[in-house]
Length: 334
Image 1: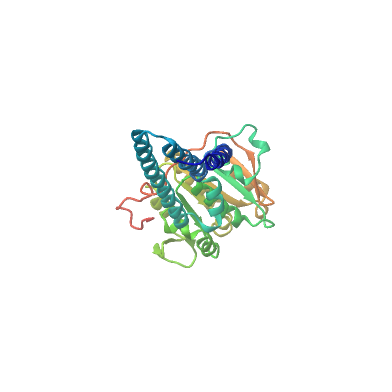
Image 2 (image 1 turned 135 degrees about the horizontal axis):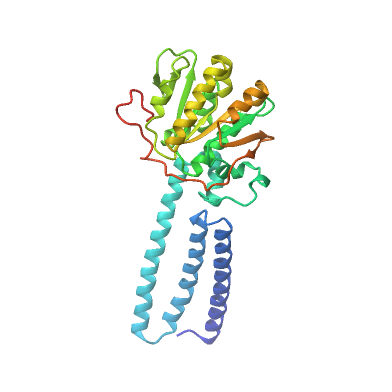
């Protein structure tokens, strides 16, 4: 039996514990909803507060109770509650461990704070030019125009990371030396099967697969459609070297190729994102290629601004076993 003085002190401690615990529950739940239910970590912190409150309140009831049945029931409940809580916490640990293995290092902070956040398109798209709205901008075929003054490679990397955050499998098409740079920056996505690389090469004479990168000779562009013909619905293709093809293959051949790509991908429900150097071509040429795409955007000061296009909802697909090519394709993206 506790002395009156100890009982009063114990009540004070338990009251403070309950007050702090309730405050913790309130604020962690607020954090969870402020991050749009992005990370389960914040819910676990709220659950931790609930668990800590029970560890102070229920033992007090068990000690003060003179009924052996009540004491036994409380002890059993505490054991069960401890098992449930630690089990959930262990599962969260597994999720975080997997995140450290799959999420690119530079994006771990965003993942731990907000997780994979899925947002609906916001009203008045024209007033939201930030790259943060990339998932809404890339809802249909999009042509992004850049100039030599911008580091468009950073935008390509950002787009690929955003698509990965939206769980969209991506094929990145580029040329050297940028292919090597992309591999260095976002090669982790290729390692986990969320992304594939195709390099249009002026040196390779045969279609080949070198260290996971498909090497496509620039004089065999038609084989590009064989490589992408079996991609699953919802897959994104980021086609970066439009300007390179314009300069090496000529406008008519490049236009015919991009036009066919747009039509094929639209019928296959694949998302196409093209990149073109606006300053490298005359206005008429740029206008022709703009007409092939439903959305048009500009890169400026590390931002992507939507110039024209709709506001349709973004379609999301999961990475993993849906990203494949059929066995009858000679060189597979796998």
